[in-house]
Amino acid sequence: MIDSAFLKENNARYLWHPMAHPNDMHENPPKIFVSADGVELTDVDNNRVVDAVGGLWNVNLGYSNTTIKQAISKQLEVLPYYSSFRGTTTAPLIELSVKILDWFKPEGMCRTFFTSGGSDSIETALRLARQYHKVRGERDRTKFISLRRGYHGTHFGGASINGNANFRRNYEPLLSGVYHIPAPWDYRNPFEETDPQKIAKLCANLLEEEIIFQGPDTVAAFIMEPVLGAGGVIVPHETFMPLAREICTRHGVLMIADEVITAFGRTGAWTGSRLWNVQPDMMAFAKAITNGYFPLGGVLLNEKVVESFESNRDSFGAIGHGYTYSGHPVACAAALATLEETARLEVARNSRVVGEHLQNGLKKLEEKYEVAGNTRGIGLMAAIELVSDPEKKTPAGKVTSAAFFEAAYQAGVMIRVSGNNIILSPPLIVTVDDVQRIVNAADLGLAAASKTL
Ligand SMILES: Cc1ncc(COP(=O)(O)O)c(C=O)c1O
Image (cartoon, rainbow, N blue to C red; front, side, top):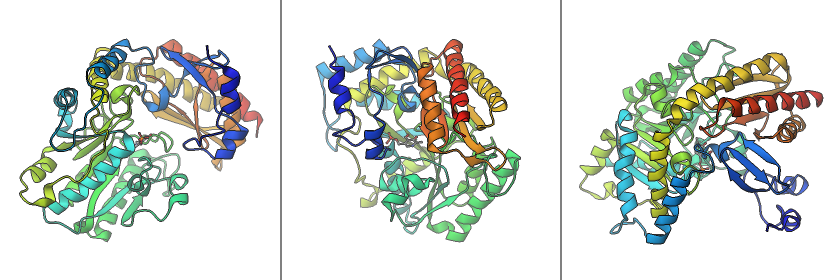
């Protein structure tokens, strides 16, 4: 029996929540969830809501996947932990290292370095990118270029390449030698341009200019999310990532795809890189690899990168990097089951088909409400950008977003607020009916948000 009075009494009093001001959590305590099944959550007051956040872009297969749960509990019985540092390994890790490459064959990936989450994976990718150049004798190639609005986790490396001041300012100074170019985005961009293809070209030109300005022999890697997630679900024009790929190749710069959100079907394709027909040099993944049931992440490497390391005979090729939980056996068992279930349930297809209902529903709301300055997305990732003045595109304030959140919750849908963006990323097993519930709740959310202006 859950003591709900105890939970409410102590809610947010003795811990600090990620991505929140501690005082705000005291004044507006978080929702307390006590159980979940299918695509629904139940809170401490017994309210049931559709989870339009999908955990945190990770519970792609919902909360009731018994195959994954059983795989976890079986592995806990057999071997709950052993390390994969030099000299030891475990059976699930070996099995996963084989199986995961089947998923990423179209991108040409041929090795994986496992981590314990998304930020770890980004840190790993950045470190291995620098090391790749050192192994090859190009020891000045240390700089990174990334997109404004991009989100790459919170380690110092990730925060440094991050494209949003909220995640940078309070932690500066960050890594030196990191440069940003504008995101290819038609709603807001510095070019006063609305044609997505032209914007893609302008941004790609800036990428090349920046590489040349820095000196190509000093740039280690360019990193991007194939679709920008936490920065507000920005879908680049289909030409952008291929153009960036060409530029990186031309200048010997590695291309890292941050697929922490986009791998495993979120966009309607199995990966974001595949969506845009690009083969990056490295791909970072995490989140949906275990359906959110256990922490795990990793970085995939292509033949070019692998060959450099594996043909190396001096100390530059030795990997002085890794985590206690790199390739945790329980996480790997969870991942093996998740990959099978992800394929069996064909969630990329569902994301494409059901996602279209979501995107169309949101576009209608954009026409209905001035406060919905812009709605955008692809597959089952979407954002509603709230504005107080649609002409000037003035971002709406916290009160407006909070009104949306509460009205949607009362209508039975959990959504995520990030600044003036409402972010939607439901499990990929949602039905058209579930999506309709989300759109209906967004309708009520926008009505409530409009009243705050
Ligand atoms: C694109 C992207 N990269 C990296 C991360 C960081 O992952 P984690 O929160 O697991 O450290 C996130 C988290 O949302 C993400 O969306």
